[in-house]
Length: 468
Ligand SMILES: *[C@@H]1O[C@H](CO)[C@@H](O)[C@H](O)[C@H]1NC(C)=O
Ligand SMILES: *[C@@H]1O[C@H](CO)[C@@H](O)[C@H](O)[C@H]1NC(C)=O
Ligand SMILES: *[C@@H]1O[C@H](CO)[C@@H](O)[C@H](O)[C@H]1NC(C)=O
Ligand SMILES: *[C@@H]1O[C@H](CO)[C@@H](O)[C@H](O)[C@H]1NC(C)=O
Ligand SMILES: *[C@@H]1O[C@H](CO)[C@@H](O)[C@H](O)[C@H]1NC(C)=O
Ligand SMILES: *[C@@H]1O[C@H](CO)[C@@H](O)[C@H](O)[C@H]1NC(C)=O
Ligand SMILES: *[C@@H]1O[C@H](CO)[C@@H](O)[C@H](O)[C@H]1NC(C)=O
Ligand SMILES: *[C@@H]1O[C@H](CO)[C@@H](O)[C@H](O)[C@H]1NC(C)=O
Ligand SMILES: *[C@@H]1O[C@H](CO)[C@@H](O)[C@H](O)[C@H]1NC(C)=O
Image 1: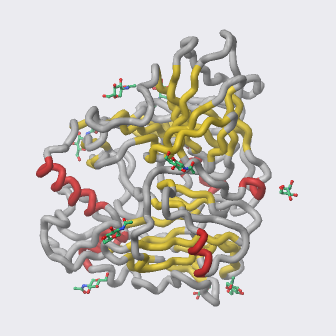
Image 2: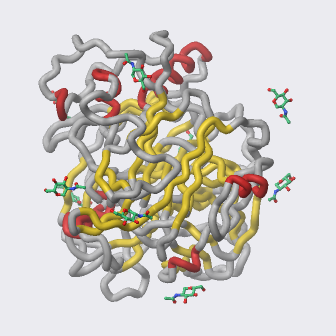
Image 3: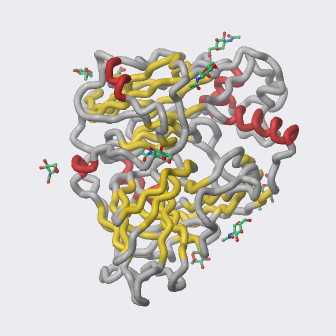
């Protein structure tokens, strides 16, 4: 899976300040999490040696928030935060600022996601914000994804030949599978409508979701309300989330929920999604990135790359490097070729400039024989076009700028997570106004080249960068 990460932590503080002014701040939600391996949770006999559980739960607990709530939780984001070491705790504070919809959390380093540590997030609308459908009778979260046999640490180092052993639904094995110790089931009231929040938390396989004898009305994708579309089955790509409404309008019976992995990934080429209601017909594109997922050999080892550059993970979080030393010594800004393929396959710490308040046109190209999903960590993008063949600037004339849907993940093209396909966008705001970029939190963790720094005496080298 390919990643684009924005260094967005300071903008979170900025929006927070604004929130105080506008008095739109929601409730404070305090969550105490104990994240630990748990080998007594065995969902499938013989396989999965241990899972990453949160408070003994797998999947982890639901975060049930409302727009603008402030969540206090121990957590970290790879690339922007230092890791939380074993037997220590750290409190991460974030706001669901202006957000609404269905999301999920997951560990973002070392393929840990394949061992668990993920869980559902619901961001409910505030009462003053109208929703395009009646309040459902009940809501259910479906975290569905592939599950591998063996140790995720071994899986992560292998590039090819990774095959999933089973598809788990909310951490439970398939019904009727002799290896399953348990299976998931839901009880709905006849005649009532429920909201199913479906996410693909897996690593490799897209799936098709359907409920025996029932239709589904798609109403939301990752925080955008969509034009409501009635479907018999729903394709969910890695990383994506959807809400569907299901009415129990059939005779009382046990109805199977069927999840079919899409083993032939080439047939899952990007398809039109139900359309949202935003317009981007009046924006000026200030930068265009053409990003191509490729395979390349570097020093005898095959790697996945973006534009022939395989991301080289470093110990110093890029966000800290930006804050303390303006990036110097840690990364070379804009070395990464944003719109061409590097002639030589190489490792690199890929950090590029995103123009403050600008619009970036992102073109994802796939010449591989597998699907690739692109995820913009913490941000959404408008999906304005897709197609076969080569992209050229003329392709822009075919874009849907009128009502594209906003996604944080879009199927483009590659198979697995964290195998060199990462790119960070640095958005630098030269305005030194402290109201725009608050200082880091008091509990800021230091690591990498800043391990020895004595916080908070270090002064920022420049105005802090902000997110898109
Ligand atoms: C492991 O999970 C089980 C079942 O949820 C729970 O009872 C137990 O406390 C957990 N163990 C640890 C060490 O968290
Ligand atoms: C989630 O929060 C909403 C709004 O506060 C509340 O109505 C609902 O009952 C909560 N759901 C769960 C499962 O806690
Ligand atoms: C969290 O860490 C602090 C020290 O950093 C310690 O005092 C506190 O007891 C810890 N809390 C828990 C719940 O482990
Ligand atoms: C996958 O589907 C495509 C398009 O339908 C087809 O051309 C291809 O042969 C299939 N591949 C396999 C391995 O079945
Ligand atoms: C979405 O709904 C709007 C308003 O009803 C309509 O104009 C538009 O054509 C719809 N888009 C699609 C793709 O159905
Ligand atoms: C586009 O933007 C300009 C300048 O902000 C504004 O005057 C115009 O009304 C906008 N047009 C549309 C279609 O939104
Ligand atoms: C910090 O880096 C940015 C590029 O992100 C550059 O525009 C700015 O001039 C640098 N500031 C200093 C003080 O070097
Ligand atoms: C990537 O780099 C290698 C050399 O390391 C080169 O042979 C290959 O053609 C490059 N890939 C593309 C698509 O240009
Ligand atoms: C390949 O390995 C050699 C020797 O370890 C090293 O000097 C060189 O930088 C490596 N090449 C790349 C692209 O990392």
